[in-house]
Image (cartoon, rainbow, N blue to C red; front, side, top):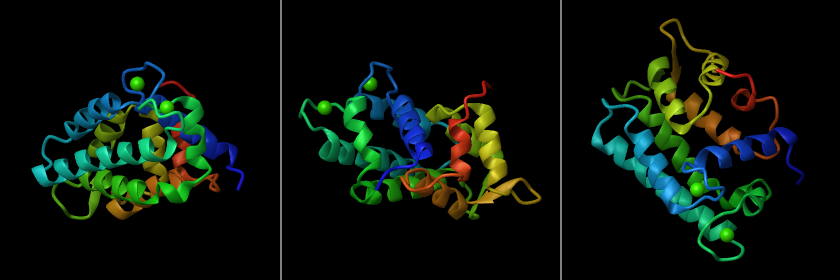
Length: 179
Ligand SMILES: [Ca+2]
Ligand SMILES: [Ca+2]
C-alpha cells in the first residue's frame, strides 16, 4: 500500500513533535519528557487516568523500538520512522491504547465528553499548533456546550495513523499556518 501524502505528512509531524528534545532521533528520553508534560496537562485528572496515559506512552515507545530500530542503536532515525506508515498493523495495539488513554485524559469527570479547554491543554502539551488544534476540535463537531465525545476523539487519533486516509479531521494538524 502506498500511503497518502497526507498520511506521510501526519507521520512526519508526529516524529518532529515526539522528538521532544529536538536532537533528531526518537529515544526513550523523548517519551519520558513528552509523557510527563502531557500527563501534567490536566491537573484534575485522577491518578488512574494519568498512570494509564503514562503507560501508553511507554508501550508506544517500546513498540516503535521493537518494530523500527533497523540498525539496533536504541533510537529511531527519521529514515527508520518512515516505515511506520507502511506497516500500520504492527502499531495498531499501541496506537489503540494511546488513543483511548489520551482521549480519556480529556474527560477527567468521566461523563464521556471532552471540553475544549482540556482538549487544548493536552494537544498543546504534545506540541501541536494552537490554531490547528482549535480547527480540529471544530471539525469533530462539538455540541452546544462545546464538547466532543471521547470516542470521537479516540477514533480521530486512530484515523490519524491510517496510511490510506486523507481528508480527515486530523489533517488540520499538519496545516502550516502559524498560531
Ligand atoms: Ca530526541
Ligand atoms: Ca535506530
